[in-house]
Amino acid sequence: MKEINHLTPRQIVQELDKYIIGQRDAKRNVAIALRNRIRRMMVKSDLQKDIVPNNILMIGSTGVGKTEIARRLAKVAHAPFTKVEASKFTEVGYVGRDVESMVRDLVEQSINLVKESKNEEVKEKAAENVEDILLDILIPPVKTAGFSTARTSSSNGEFDPDKASEQELNEKTRERFRDKLRNGELEDRKVEINVKQSNSMGVGMIGNGMMDDASIAGLQDMLSGMMPKKSKKRKVTIEEARKILMEEETSKLVDFDEVKEEAIFLAENNGIIFIDEVDKIAKSGKNGSGPDVSREGVQRDLLPIVEGSAVNTKYGMVHTDHVLFIAAGAFHVSKPSDLIPELQGRFPIRVELDSLTQEDFVRILREPKNALTKQYQALFEAEEVYLEYTDDSIEEIARIAFKINEEVENIGARRLHTVMSHLLNDFLFDVPDTIQANAKIMITKEMVLERLSSLIQNRDLSQYIL
Image (tube, rainbow, N blue to C red; front, side):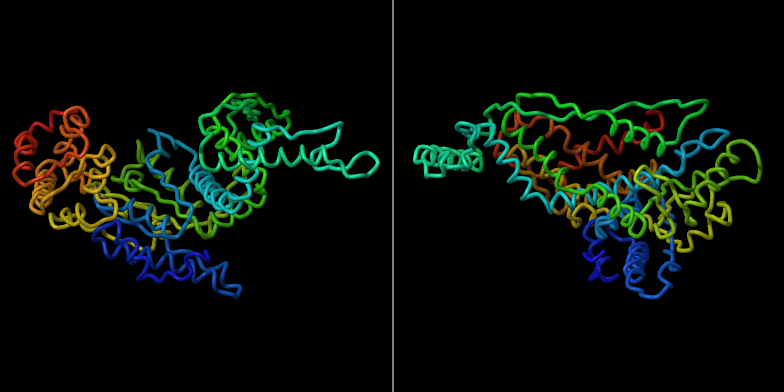
């Protein structure tokens, strides 16, 4: 949390603005929710544990930025983030996938985040160890009459010049090879290394019923811990050996118990769970049978997780009281009020996202750091072909995408992927065969109209396309 303590709600919104166009209300609400977490951690009194996050319900059609806002918020906060679809928890007539799996997924993300951070801390030390291991393989340490190269005296304690010169020669050779390793001169040279193999054991049905995910994972860990570690000799290039050994050395230097402890704390206090398609589990009618039973069952299973409960994971018990839940749905058929009252009460902040306008599409193509136009430019530049757009070509792409959304089905900004793909696929096919390196492609309004006219004219056929 220390890394983001300085971020004010206004600065959080500015960070989100770099990737998401519009949706001011949604950004403000998630920024306040994130800042409130920082404020809670600053509270010194016993009230700290009683301050729970205000979960958010986002309402808006597909492609307007609901998922992206939540995902980018997690990146800004350096927080573990997991996305689940509520419809995955339901099957016709009965409750489907175990809802607690979302918490286990969150903890896995948290473990990865903490491990990444810890690995970075020991990276230099691990690299030194790997270098020494590789040098020992390339130039085995010289030992004379049972003495290591470190000993330069004879058996009677007098200085032995022969041993000293041998050690000096060995050290000079090692230093020369160390320089070669650092300069990347030996990357293609093959060496033989011992690679530890994991003792993975599959566990299925136990007794008369299926074990839950946490129990299976715990049993697998226990069984693999009991089995002796096997190692296998492999002949690989120094480049590959460095990657394999780096992984082994970092795992030796990092205390995994410490990783687990930090990861659980991070998940509990900074985790974000995004529940998409929550409208699919809302009751659309008043009848009490059929698929509605399953939908309400999923809501009732979600309720304790969102309210705050202890979930058993293979890394330990995780409490969800301070996890931030962001739910989202289009709510075309059902309404938020169709959710059970208890679940509605757990999402007190409701934000309605705006439908995207043609002007929004223009801004989406121009402004974000990861704009689709910039992504295509990067793909072409990878093969030394340079793609450029005129201003009116971007406006025309936006106009066509917006028009198709209006007349066929509104899938929001995702329509831009369809249009851009249709516009540029021929060029992508021709590179590098007929379009050579250092070529320049200029996208003009006329080209956009020519290439996308068929997409507009044939829009009525879309209803027949599966």
